[in-house]
Length: 303
Image (cartoon, rainbow, N blue to C red; front, side):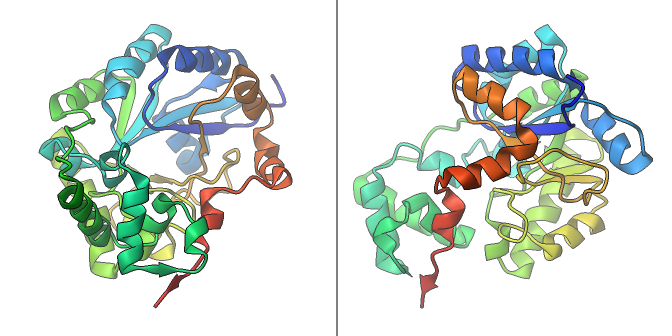
C-alpha cells in the first residue's frame, strides 16, 4: 500500500506460533521486509526506504530459536535480536522471567514491606519493581524464593551455540540489551556504564564481531533512558539504538533513539488495524484512555 510508512516492530517471547505466522503473512502483504543493514544505511548513509518493515526481538527467549527462526527461514525475512551476554553464558533468566509464575500477592507484600508508594493498592507489582534498582529487585526475588521455598527457575533463554547459529544464518542481526535488564534511569552512573558498555564488549567477544546496535530495556525515552545512556552508547560506537516509542521511523530521528512498535498478541482485526494505522496509534491509545504501565509507574515512591 502506497500510503504506509516505514515501521519497526518489536516482539519478545512468541508462544503462539500460529498467531505469529499469520502476523508475518500480513506484514509481507502490506510491507517490504528489510534488514538491520538497510535500516542503518537509511539513517547513516541516506539510502531510501519505502513501506519498509524491520522486525526486532528482545531478550533472546528460546521461542525465537525454536519457533520463530524456522518461519524466518521459510519466508526469508531478516530480523534483529537483542540479548545479554551474561544471560546467554550463565544460562539464567532476566528478573521478569523469573517472577512470571509467582504469586503476585505475596510478591507485592514483600515489595510493600521495603518501599512505600502513593496509592500503593492501585499499582501492579511489576510497575512497583520498575521503580527500583536492579540489585533491589533481585533482593526482593530472593526473599520471595526463601519465603515460599521457590527454587530458581530453569533458563528460558537461548544458549551461546544457538545464538551463534542465528548470527551465521545471514538472517539475524544480533545487538546488545544490557547485562541484567535494569530500568537504566533508576541506576547510578557506574551501574549504567557497566550495564551498557560491558554488554556490548562481552557480546562482541562471544560472537567475534563488532556490536553496532542496542535496545533499551523497557525503552521509553526520558522515562527509562535519557541523554546519559545515549552518550555512553555513542562512546561505544553504537550506530543504532532502539526505543519503544510507538510510531513510524523517519530520517529525522535520533539514530540512538529509533522508534519501535510493540506486538504481544491480539486478534487479526487488531493486528491489521495497528499495522495500517501505525501513524495514528499513539493518538488512538490516548483517545481510548486505556491505562498502561507508564501511568502506574508515574505514582511516586515515598521516602
